[in-house]
Amino acid sequence: MQCLDWQALDNDAKRQALSRSPLIGDTNLEQQVKGIIDQVASQGDAALKAFSEQFDKVTLDTLRLSDEAIEAAAAKVDEQIKAAIEQAKANIETFHQAQAFKAIDLETQGGVRCELRSEPIEKVGLYIPGGSAPLISTVLMLALPAKIAGCQQRVLVSPPPIDDAIVYAAKTCGITDIYQIGGAQAIAALALGTESVPAVDKIFGPGNRYVTEAKRLVAQDSRTVVSIDMPAGPSEVLVLADSTANPDFIAADLLSQAEHGPDSQVMLVTDSQTLADAVNLSLVEQLAKLPRVDIATQALSASRTLLVKDMTQAAEVSNLYGPEHLIIQTQAPRQILNNIRAAGSVFLGAYTPESVGDYASGTNHVLPTYGYSRAVSSLSLADFCRRFTVQELSAEGLLGLGQCVMTLASAEQLDAHRNAIAVRLATLASEEK
Image (cartoon, rainbow, N blue to C red; front, side, top):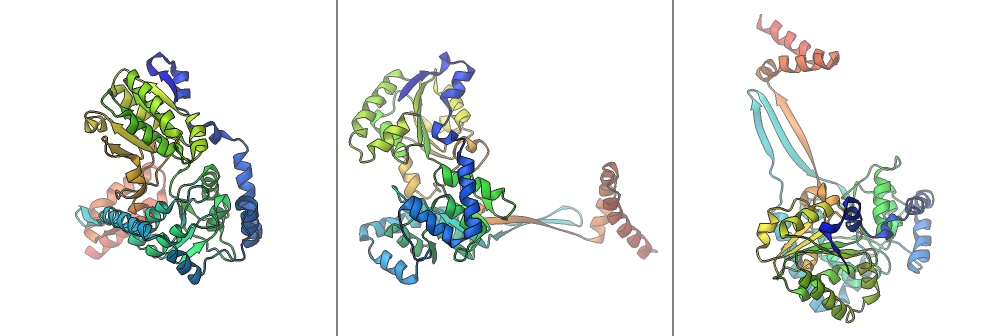
């Protein structure tokens, strides 16, 4: 990894040091993805099958997995994998059930009652990345909160051929609608609907830059009424470490994200040159042993180490970057945590690798990337619900609030708003006579 002295950089160089992978900046990406969406809109299932042949090299007769196919795939899954899925599932359920919405019902003043209520989103689409790294864990991260929230229709899509363990995980989470489609075309199908694939109200799930761009475009498309969870694209991690940290642990954590894809990015911010050198040596040793060495090597080429004067400055750098995953391996990680303002998910201490959050600790691994963690939260149960307010005024309440509203409406020159209050107050006044 390239090593830079943060204090020696000017403002432009600092911005460059915190920039994401150059693969994300493809100017042709929007047009490519728009073309895919338009083709799905006009050709439906036929377009989805054609794209599967083009991109996945798979010829499909049907897009939806039959009940028999789901059962057959689930039966092939190794018992050890099933046991691991069950353990992870239990932790994720525990953490997300604890997030259950608590309604608010109170009087803001006499006779003025205000409520905040929550209802599940009826139809949700769950995108599960496949390809070179089928993300079994993402099924749990999406399907379980959708089930706990009470979403009535839960549609899962994943590139063909779908890994048997993905199918098993979906089945154990109560998913029955599973479709063999991936990439931008899958997002288009969920947003627009086709002959086979139902249109949904909201789309969830991480993916590569094509998936991320497709989510952005469909959310702005006048042909759809669909929302998305967040900007969640290629994976990234930033490690804050002092001289007490274990360089082998850090190298392992950096590589665990670098192996996701060539457009992933990993960063180390430290106040110790000695540690930085040791991490680089360990990266070389561990990288050579990985089966995905080529992918990780490409990711490391757009990654870097930043040397800072102290850990206070390290936290400042992290907040500027806004990482998807933030690992804090320092002597007192919770002290550093107090200075953290922007991160998708935080991992404290030497024995909390990012991998536990990816799979089984209980937190959700669907997180904002590209620095969006400065304004966007990690996925939670609330994302599968919609909240709305209720207000109810008694006659007493309107008498106490009416003049306030009429004054403000007049100041805004919205006379009809003022009149909606005035006619009621006049009626109340006449009833008192």
